[in-house]
Image 1 (cartoon, rainbow, N blue to C red):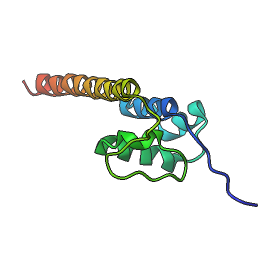
Image 2 (tube, rainbow, N blue to C red):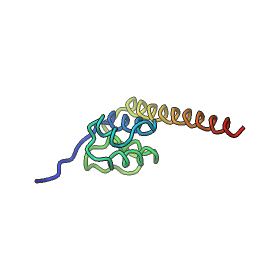
Image 3 (cartoon, one colour):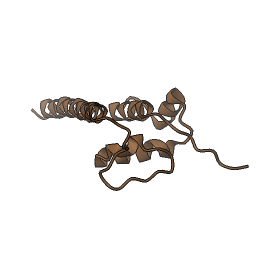
Image 4 (spheres, rainbow, N blue to C red):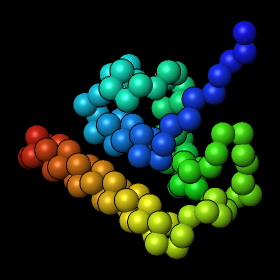
Length: 109
């Protein structure tokens, strides 16, 4: 019996990253919510996200791209929308960090 490969949509991958970055969900909860089979998948997506390798989220199963190249079937508008979504998530993370930093500062003084 062979191992079947699961394909997760770009939206599922980004939702998993958002849930993980919020700090409110464990890997197990994310897996149950989104139907992800293996928690190592979430770790891999997080690694890609942190490295800024956004093109990897839309590559087909088993297909490797040269560094910095994305799938050819995406239009420029689709690529810009994905980049915009990535930047919005980064902005949300920075805002949360500022809140945490502010609370640390208030405790010190």
